[in-house]
Image 1 (cartoon, rainbow, N blue to C red):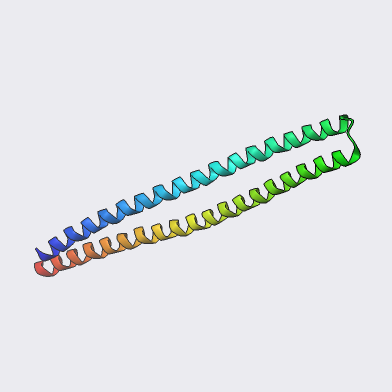
Image 2: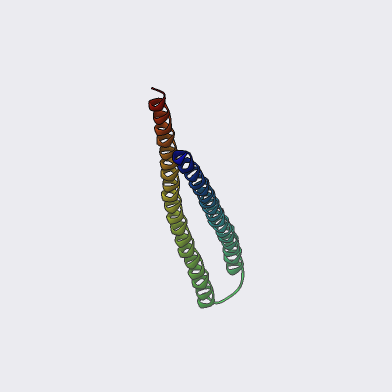
Length: 136
């Protein structure tokens, strides 16, 4: 009876662990989706900025401005593009960090699941062994 009660308690813990694992998996998925979405947004923004920069280059070339005015405008656009490139690199770095963290958390979840499976298996084996000894 004690073994049966202990088995019931372990099953309760097992269910709690499974719920926790499910929550962790959902959090990992949500974080990955959030950062993927942010990265996609940044790619679109960079593409838009590139188109704008190209259009401005055309406008500058066709406009009758002084050489220094065109140079100032071009430098400002290049600075803006460089800043966006740096920002893009930072986001890629953050994404890579998240992927590593996601991998680490996935391994942790797998270890937890494996540990729960081993505890459950060893408990069942012990119960079967006990039952066998009583019958012999």
